[in-house]
Length: 236
Image (cartoon, rainbow, N blue to C red):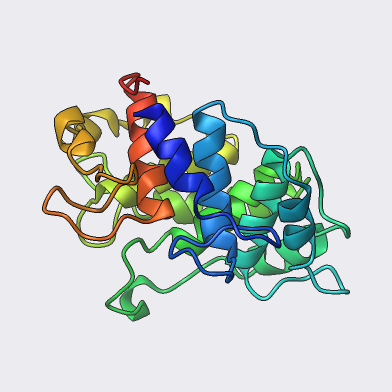
């Protein structure tokens, strides 16, 4: 399985750097980060000067990016390659962190996880070792804890596994102990099935969202390999 996945990923590398899951010369940050993360999980070679150059080129002259997501994918991908951004991105991240709060009642219906944008910002807060002031950090912790439900999980109106995973990761990045939060009971009710994950792999080596088929993507392949790595069940 390992070699099939590696071949699937490398077949989606763009000649000028970066990755694109539909195999055109149209690299994007999301596919690039997921591709590099998969290779990293599978302990494959990550040396790639062209991709490093592509990623550095996504940063603007003032150190900002097109979006928080673009910043996240570029910074995290460069870290996997042992590289850093050309300019200091911390002022841009801090400006966005100061506006991290959101109104859950006004989120678009298509939003899968309400914590998506906030989780990316807080992840970068940790990766970049940003020394935000105490009140900001404490305020972020308080805001996240406000979405914990009686079952121990996190979410708006009801708990979801995705929001719970992101909430716990954010709290950990912010230095808040999570062991005593009582989320384990909710998580155990949602434990993943290894057989289900393995059956989401298609003949090309990539993973789709369900066992019923569909197009494999680099993002879904990362989710599959990441889950199997945590469960210690992927093999050659």
